[in-house]
Length: 132
Image (tube, rainbow, N blue to C red; front, top):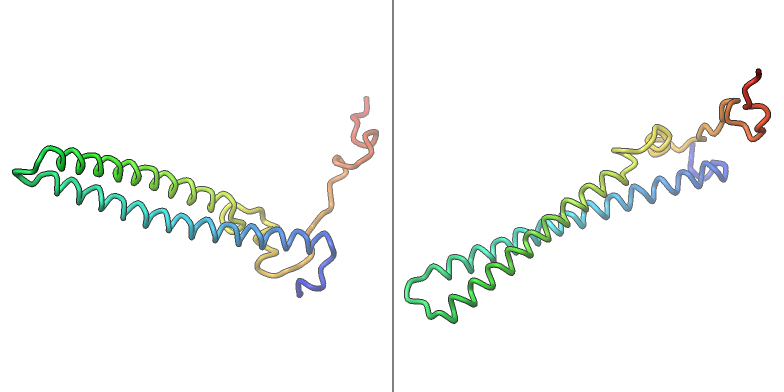
């Protein structure tokens, strides 16, 4: 079945599920960007640490290198936290990983979703009230 032949409710559900998949893909791509920033910042921190170990270095250069090393190290820490948050958000939003059965089913083949409710969830409160 084509997505063009779905009812309005199923089509809205289909579009929402596709949007969740796109957002999940975007967050996963952003997490890879943050992972790259982590390695770049960690490398810079390590490089300034190696420069700081040179013998006969004036104290003002040693202090500057130490400050750079700490700053880039903190940047690497922040980027790794961003990576972890982005990856966990991508998994949480993804209809492929944490989605419902209807979301997985409609992504494979667009079809009408089951919207029927059991009798106990009807809109009539008297129908769902227990009988004594």
